Image 1 (cartoon, rainbow, N blue to C red):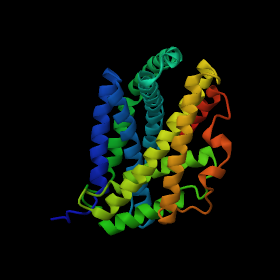
Image 2 (image 1 turned 120 degrees about the horizontal axis):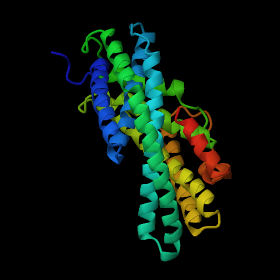
Image 3 (image 1 turned 90 degrees about the vertical axis):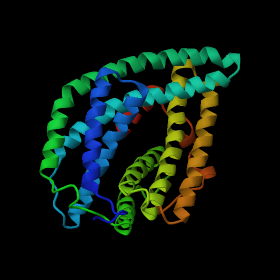
Image 4 (image 1 turned 90 degrees about the horizontal axis):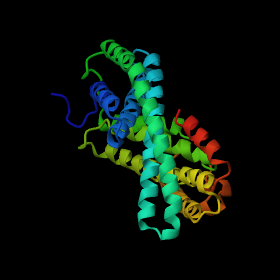
Length: 306
């Protein structure tokens, strides 16, 4: 009987692929908020498993290349990501508008209408992407699984998995966190490291603790980036002088400060490989506020989903 606390990456990969296939069908029928969120998450989880298998291969284990599958996953992730981002932004605006004074509600309603229109178009694009790639994705992923050994043939002890996740993160995270792009990249790397650590069963204390740290970092960075992007969209739609835009700017700065405090804390605990880290109060102003038109910010965000 296999050790209960060990991780089995191939078994986890097969489980994620099965759920991804089901979610593709569900989103083709109805790209609602929850299915789209789950679809996007599953594309990243499958990508994380492929990264883990690549890492194991460099240590002497053989796995088949999955370049075509990766390309398809990337296209699905981008299409689902556009819809998901709009859902998050809509939720933030709705939440804020419900708690705001009347003078903010007019701008909030204008913003909500624009986001709703964009969401409808993005959901249509997602459906077309899924219809185009659904069959090809299934063929690539299932073909890849056939070329891999049995699902229980590769296992990692809690210690092995913890060391592997730390090693991967230190080799792939940015060493300096001084710009918007670096902080955004850190969040994405933390998310993937979290998914790697979550290969471990819940009773594997050390890799699960590490995964929880990366999750907290990912979520703190996500809150900052969501507010930053939304403030730039608001500036473009209702004006830089709008009280709503100014409120979103304040939220972005507060979220940035919280994110940076966590980065500093984890750096001091040696969980992050920072070579240099400026304290929050001396970071360039462009990180906490808009430095480009919203249309440019949206395009940059789409590129950073890659």
